[in-house]
Image (tube, rainbow over all chains, first blue to last red; front, side, top):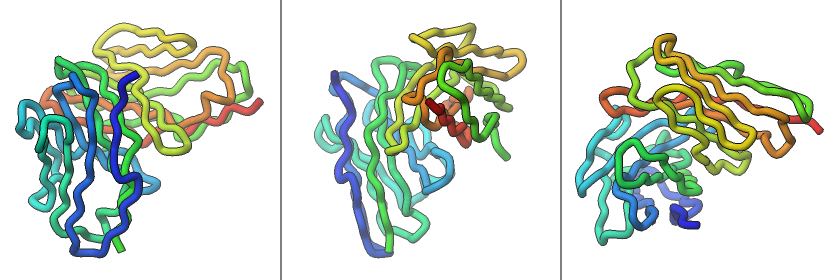
Length: 114
Length: 108
């Protein structure tokens, strides 16, 4: 069964460093999402992406964040200058050919900022 | 301000019991999602609904748009159902809001 994959599973970085989290969505999906979950807190929406551009973003998704689909298979989330409070689990998800399709989640990347 | 409220926050049940988790929301929605988060952290989408009722195996989800309320029911609960169940909504502006989750433990 097709699945969403994410790499790395765990990333440790120093405050102020740039990180790129990678996701490979399900191959025929057209909608892509990033979410984060700070330890012990609820899942929060960051951004959705369709047709090579951001379609919605939350207040969390400020200028420090960017997303890209560089090669037609990968979907990346970049954090330019990490802060301690960026430490969280980051989930990628994708959904099919219409926006209202069920979303399929990746296993997540745990980001630890020291 | 929480756009999505779930109850209860924690639930312990004996194997075989019928379980209900409730979700109320305060925004206009285009869809409501029920998600399951396993102890290891992985998230699985259980249901997406915008009206009525959906059933998948022992799981049933209902939504009442007028009352802005949804329920997730688990019949004949089993220890493998132990997980956090999350209600989330897509509002009419295509923003996503998540509840804080209901932690379910089913005891053999």
